[in-house]
Length: 556
Image (cartoon, rainbow, N blue to C red; front, side):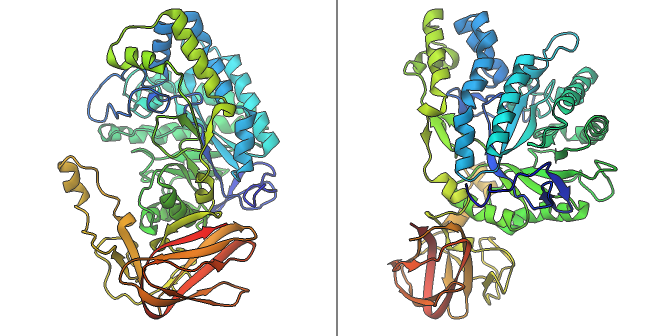
């Protein structure tokens, strides 16, 4: 088991100023995967229609096979009502089982985020009727989390009536009805009270995530006061039952805005046991993190980046910035269908006749027979099991910065900061807006033309370019940068890559080792040794000439 999980799960997680700590007061940096598609599937990740962000500007119904509710309707049409009635009970248990949780722990993760759909736990019928089979399934997952020592974050991904205004909240339509309908609001609170009653003594539950991505489309921003009111009331009601658990609170606009968090408003009076939870940053630099860190300091609570996805290199750079600022991360999503292009830990194969189902749900083709459809969905339920999945052999190395991995030279360590982690005397800022204020000589790759402004790119129907991927570090005498690698095993070496126009000498300094000097022209450097250790920082400094440094790699 890695340094990130070993002996780190000891009692209830709680906030201690800006740090999360366990029952023994030891800091815990949450690193884990989100269980997207487990109890709240989204069609684009389970072999269905491509991602389509409906409802951002008007009231529109979700498409067929687009979220849990519409997926279930399609299964009912194809396989019959009785089959559909039992499908989610079978799906959730096949999708997330002991082999999955053991694998995440083995890879060095210490937490998982469990996105729940309220309608699987509270029947959508008059009266209050809890689905005991769903609670039994959740109990099984928590028992496994306890066995493998992974904190489980209970995530209300789909509240009663929907809270986001997006397909991911499994609502009737793309309206955040929980903030508009008193019955939906009350039923969501009653469900949270039930979770608290059942799990108040379970230390393996790391936090209660009260709402995922509430009030995301801009047209619902006027409901933000209702979000604050909901948090205040539901926390007060839960605290009458559960004094132990930490709350995970998100702001509006895809959990990217932190306006509601101020030092003047205490969301958990008397306990102060909560943290700010944010989503998605695709620009790996401290500038992207600063607004969240400022709010964390203002409220004196921890920060958690609870849903992210990016290239391996982007995550390796940004998550080191997060963790050195006492903030953990969670990746969306752990397990996806083989035809979904998003960072993942494992993928599962689609049934061999899936094109017949897809043709019906997405293209208006003929409906397969009940018998054939049941066979196809039975194959799907078998395929999602871990034993049939293909593992991404690289992703955990990047997430945990454990060799082998390679990052851009511009992804140097951000902390402890200038003069220690990096140093340069650039008087003018780079024209790319990347890592401004560092004083580091960041330049474009030879021949690179600066990207078009994101606003104009979108007006032209283009995707904004990820400009930071086309940058390098021009190191000249006196310029230095540091790079950290974790869990270094015997036989690990480092290697640098320089671009055309380079001709200089780099001094490699590692505590406890004799300095190494590398002459770099275009291409890869000679490898240099990295000593064993839980955390090793490599400092690169130019002593003569000039080098356009592109990547820093750690290999085994």
